[in-house]
Amino acid sequence: MRVLLAVMALSLPAVALPVQSPSSWIAGFWYGQGQPNDRSEMWIAHMGADGSFHAQFRACRKGKASDTTNDGNWRLNGDMETIQIQTVGGQFFPRTDYYAILAHDGKSQSYRYLATGFVYTSRRVDAKFQMPACDLVS
Image (cartoon, rainbow, N blue to C red; front, side, top):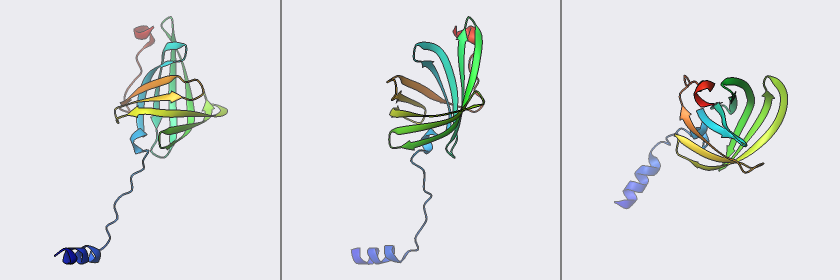
């Protein structure tokens, strides 16, 4: 019987299963708060499934928002995330940042910026999510 099952399994046509990128969990929109030396800053990052990213950062000072953006590409290799920034505030300003993913569950993540050791946390949000107004957080 085992031989018959093995022969049947070998004679079946190969079925191509979709290959899922090991980094697919990070694609989407993420919201977080806090930067080194300033817990009031916040950001929304769109991590594209194609490896692109766009992040909007907001600093709140006395109820007023100061926004800027970063654009570039991301790559995930195991628990190491590499962010290659091309523009900051629309100006060419290339740099590469490295992060160690500490934990993720598809709904939230924590990661350490290797240059400073600062630990960031963020949660998944939908594309319509808006950052809170500064008068609510400062």
